[in-house]
Length: 67
Image 1: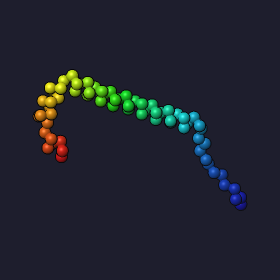
Image 2: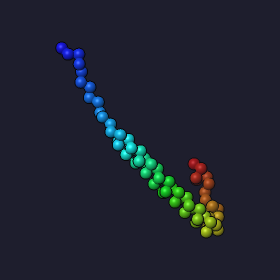
Image 3: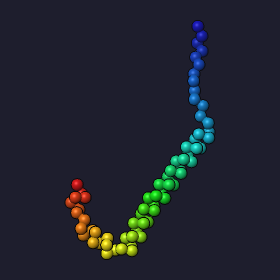
Image 4: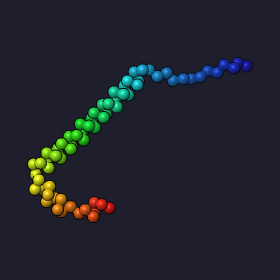
């Protein structure tokens, strides 16, 4: 009987890690673009229509939003 055992080891290529790293940076970049655009758009509308934002804040039900 042989004491030698065959171990199956998955070989990882260096390009796998690089591809995953690039994909993660791409995902983070797209999220920054999306949410950055939303915040900038909110700031622009808040600057252009301050009266409408004030009127909406008066009608806001804070008790409903706090629950």
